[in-house]
Image 1: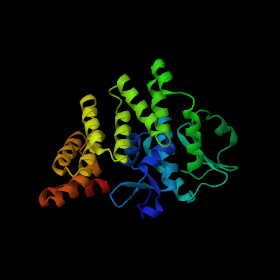
Image 2: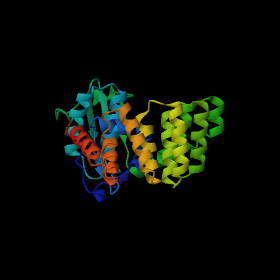
Image 3: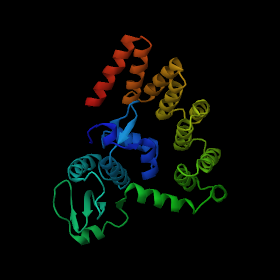
Length: 295
């Protein structure tokens, strides 16, 4: 969907996107894989997102939840992207599911991006519950931080409310990482198969330079969630950061055994094989990566 550009043109990292949108790394990876956006790449091959990517990613996720068919979402977002500004307009945008269609409100105008047709106000009103307010970064952070006050770790544990605690843990990551880590660990006590909690906690550790701890954590995660390709992928990245390249390749292979179309795993494995002098293996993974990118 979006064209990959220079990192300075795509200022948002994966972690920032998670914090802004309140959706997990696994959901973001799935939306990227399905072609809703094509992020730029940073100097270490990490994802970098534009403002338009943020809008489209949030919209795609909400429309999927509203059971809009994937092909219709893709067509609508392709048209919508052509009209999006580089920054959030003062009037804001509201993207809404109306039946099986997508509608956009920009100030006083209501329209369908797929057809360009205007939508009457009463049609938008009928879509209650299906709307998605698209917020700017500062507004999104403020809303998240305000919501985090509503529920602490102990209350969530008493209520056995794993999802509520997970949402608060995500909100705490930026301003209170100690509380966020405690919350993620509490979730894993209650629900050891909560893959997103493992993923987020491991990513926090790596971001904080605690890659050794992240490796141990991801290994525990895979014992509880053995079929999660993204856990294998993140473990491989943590091993790479520690210079344990051969072990990283084993985990990339494990990731690809579970999901042969995981393009980034092919790319990273190719790069590592090339560094280690395994030219034939590197070529095989590079070819797989290019094939998946074209598809």
